[in-house]
Image (cartoon, rainbow, N blue to C red):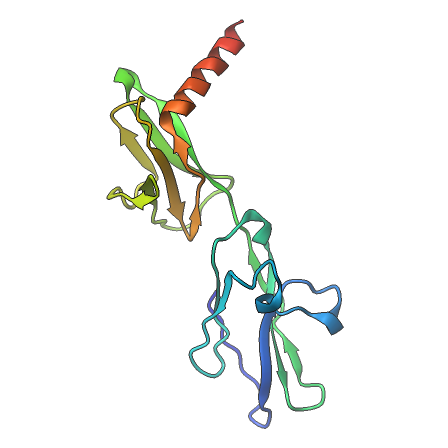
Length: 178
């Protein structure tokens, strides 16, 4: 998340941090010290007044309002960014659709609408494949046993095995017809 801040020139900033839990202002916890975030959050400050940070390996549970806070050397010199930055993390998943002639289409989908122009990366057995910038991927065979996943905006879907999904789809159809 990109961020900049300003403060009176007569103050000296002593501490800066990001937090999400606002219910106890006297005990605000720096995300970089929170066990849930410490190994995933990175402060990218590259100059004064820069409060940019990154969260890696996003999870749906990371959805929250993130606020930046800085403390100065002056009495009452505690400042918090309002209203904060609202982050909604959506779960990605690969949907498998069986086509004619034993081929399948994999579609990278989300639990909510993805805004703006998105770049999708497809992975086969954990390695990026050349199908960039497409939310769908066509495979020639439904017997493919490789694992496929997709990623966009720093979020990666769980991997799916096309052959296993195909078997599940057929058994679901049989149950519906019984």
